[in-house]
Picture 1 (cartoon, each protein chain N blue to C red):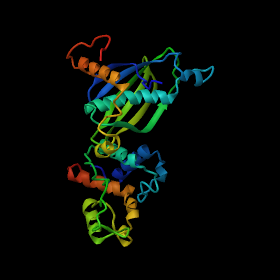
Picture 2: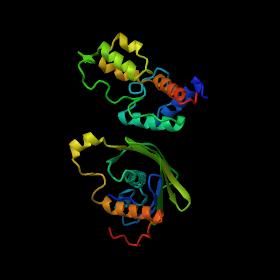
Picture 3: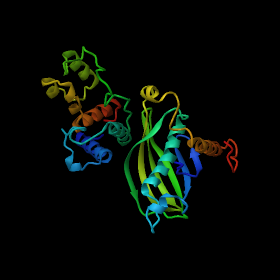
Picture 4: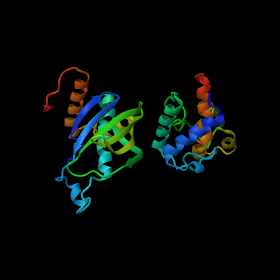
Length: 133
Length: 171
């Protein structure tokens, strides 16, 4: 039964391998793209490694949704995510911390939701779900 | 220039692992330039051979329906250089295989000696998008690869004990 700290440490070690970054550069609120330099293919690499590391299945698009809004005007207007869009985000990514984003929901800032902490929370949820926690 | 960096499969277990050999000859052009007076095989070409071995293993797992492209080499390390006259063995095993892509672990040996190892990550080009751009033809597994694919399939059927593979493939 891994503790929160153990999960975070394993996630951090996974990111060191996948992104070739130093462990000291990884903070809970580091964003994968902005701070750690992840590119699109790295997201898939991270998913593969997390599956192996934690012995879980991560369905396609669950941890890193590929296209959340698909240009739907109900979800995005004038470059900002609407209330309906925020609800959609909350439903699809319950493990993401949306409070800060919701204060200034510019669609261009969505990538900032993908943080080290977010992955750790997702893993915690998955482990709890599969009864391993 | 022919872009085939493996000569023959030694074994092939569908969806799991494969071994292929590369005989390194002084007649190969790259040894003239890498380096003059000190001919050693560029590590990048060893990685290419490993990636071709692994790429065919990954492609075969889905009956070559996917366009398998090398997307990333998260790590690679080499213990020494490879010289003309040596026979390299590329050993690969699939770590993960999913609809979006696959990752493999690979080792390069001369005899029992470990020359290098690498992890290689392949992506399946998104089917819907790549069809719009490239059409129906699978450009990854075409042309020069066809002969190797036939060899891989023969090695696979031999490993499964279906029928003995002939010494010289006819496909």
